[in-house]
Length: 158
Ligand code: PNS
Image (cartoon, rainbow, N blue to C red; front, side, top):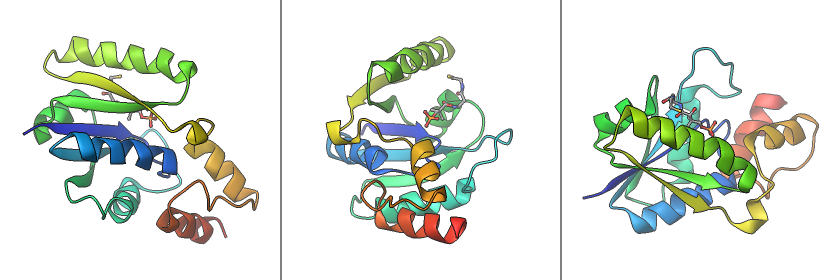
């Protein structure tokens, strides 16, 4: 039984994130989408709201669940019995920071292995920050985020 953790800010989840989660759902027995709760930041959606959105967006994959965590990722991985951490890579610019984080996680815990999944090319430019900016400025984000997220953005920003 291999459990994979897909961690992130997910403020909000995008179609790029969901593409990575879908890949993981097909590869692993269990997938936990882990929403970071960082009290030092002021996200648009609370950690609970992000978990709820992810639950709605991943309902079609029975081996996927969402949860939030505070503190070290490797500690949360231990808590849920995950041995693998999966992150999506859009471009080489992502790789530079992701490799740094994965090596830090390896220093903190030799039990956790980091794997990287290339995102779909059509989502290569997609980020939660840009989605929020476009939505705030009245642009359409319907093609960039799942339906429940598009509705939540409209409600939050109207
Ligand atoms: O969506 P993001 O912003 O790329 O996600 C970053 C995340 C949540 C994976 C990263 O910030 C994280 O792992 N935070 C938990 C704190 C931690 O464990 N830090 C030390 C290892 S880098």
